[in-house]
Length: 261
Image 1 (spheres, helix red, strand yellow):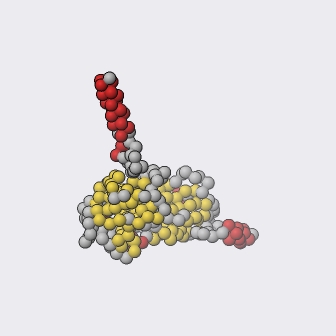
Image 2: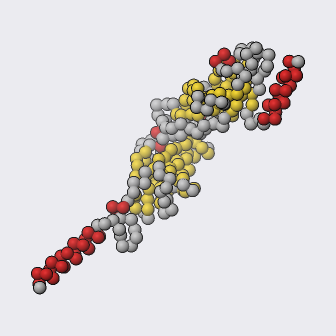
Image 3: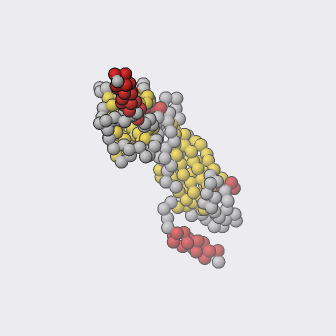
């Protein structure tokens, strides 16, 4: 009987030990076996508001329940050891002047002061420029070409001044047939003979850091600009326009037809 009681006791102990290692904590907290990876990505934008820089992080999996999760950055900071992020919907962001811009920082996802996952990042190697803006296209009848110009806030910045710009344009009816040109200036000339006559085109621009020190990602695309090429006989001027209504375009075409008569 004693042997049977001992055996049953050992069996009960083993079952209890196994259940304790099953990954479910009695108090409902996360156990180490349950921890997800919480993979995330970050990008920086320098001098977004005067001397202040912006760091933004998001989870790679949009389904992650981020209700009680926090982000913290430590290292390569001025005067402080660590800083906590603010949260706006699914994005975590930090706007500060305290980035040293030299060396690596450690960015961690935290739950109740416990690090869930961490990544080492260098702020100057994850730069995402601000999107270009004010894209314009002007047709030069005498030169038979189109002059494309755009603007970027980085021309006025101390850091990340040198960028590569990608200009993408297409005929509107050909959705995936984008032509692309890379340049470091904010001006591009498109030859009329390389475009379809009397056709509507869409054009947009994005930028990426281009320097030995600053690296990173492509910016968001600029707002698209639309322009029409003239007919091959050259008697009809093109109308370049941005957010111009269809009514104005039709009035312009009617005026052009009346002039021909």
